[in-house]
Image: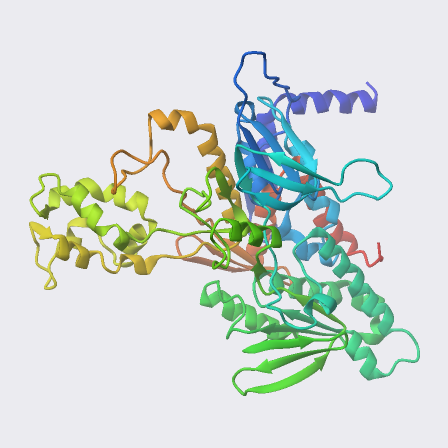
Length: 581
């Protein structure tokens, strides 16, 4: 048997048994091994084209804007045979954005974390069409989107065209928020796209190459080698850690003449970096950065950025100071894209900071439009807004009072409809739901009136929380929304949601409920921190290997899994590449 025929047979056998492609074993050297379960690739088999036959009703058209975490997750689980699905995105690939900081320093190559959209959307039960174009306007009145193709000027065809929809799914993400700080757009690097990471990688090498040129003073060399990170969140901290490792493990060997001139500074407006993590992780990160020589400036707000200096105001002292820089990476949060802002004005949300949806991910004020991912925020309804309706629905005998039995009959619907109720019960350590109806002295009551009922639940809404703009949230929203689309007709006849307290019947679906699986913060030096469910905090080298395993298993395809793991292996053996390519 020749080598080529062997690989041909092996490839057929592997593709013919998708179950065999679900397990990925990454042996860890520091804390045993971790078996990571990864979902099989969705592009097995060839797509089947479903054409409408004469006399058949037209399929509802679903237009999906964006191929990020939310949009890709929606497409992955959607039953495309039931709809006419059109996907629109200015990029023809999906990028595993949590690894962008690794791309900036060559730990992982850019092509290793991207997967072509056309490979992802292959389906057995339907066809999904893709257009590489940018959405410039959403026309809610005529239920259409205006699109623009951004290709070379020498190509023929229409640059701008429109696409009508029956259902629209907005998943175009967000843009970097500069807070209108002067000079940021002109003089800072961002880290949201693959192209951003590639530009940073080139600029880092430029800074070192410039610093070793003859004829420069020591002050000029120090300025070129001062790397500033604005923003102490996960992205900014991970980039600072990656850059420190890049210098200590690779660049110091190539540029030994300037090894004492390199400086990395993290500027954070809050009191601590990683302030969205557990205090133990934030404290450990600050201590580790201090040991590594990374300067962390907390309580500082950037006022302006020029091509040579960054000016900031130190809040505790009220002083304004300027420091020279060679490269600035701006990582301070996200803002709304112009096309979304324009859409918000059309539907009466001009006064909102971000596109608002209800708990079923439907855009408020616009029919048949859904928004998922970073471009939108769920507005959870307060329980006190419906407290009178809840009491009336629970009071089956119209006695004006609520018995313990009547309350228990409705509590499950309350918990499903209002997620803050479950958080409140957990925070108050309520074991028996009857305890909610006790009087102020702690005595049991057999029944309560409406005012006593309001008083018992008065503090529930204090547990309302906004969801973070993370890949984990976006992916879960996409999966949830696809399930709603797949079961749309079925749930009209057999609703699964909680009862409607202000009207009769039940909601078709349960509201979206985010389930937190934890979050990681790589800190460099083969150390990472993890905050996992159950108030479990893990820090150290073993956590870094856990990070490797989880991130490898979460890749969108086996191709990217193999490439990412091989990049990590290559880095361990040969180090990072410093070529400007």
